[in-house]
Image (cartoon, rainbow, N blue to C red; front, side, top):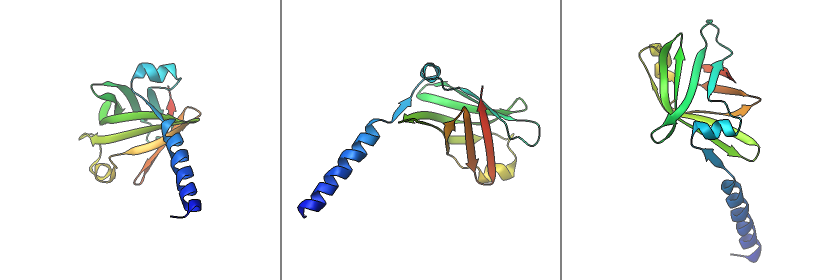
Length: 136
């Protein structure tokens, strides 16, 4: 390998390592609140007048979430909230849908949704579904 290629490879390694080192994931609701991140989110784009409500809570192995609509549980799963530089990203994963979710939606719902938090809003999208959530 030429010295130039080796130098570029070393730079790439250093810069990618530095970027990864700055990503931190929060592991409790207490940490979320300390960083000014909401744990309750309300869908602002519901066209049926029944917004989906997402609640992030402390779970046995980290953060978990539940989502309800019209008082009925729709979704559950794990949640992560990670910060890198000035960006904060919420990821909802291992999603399990209850029988309250219409069958068609259950069939196309991805198991993982991720979006940045911008101005106390999360814009989630998966399959044909999209929703904007506002922190509460």
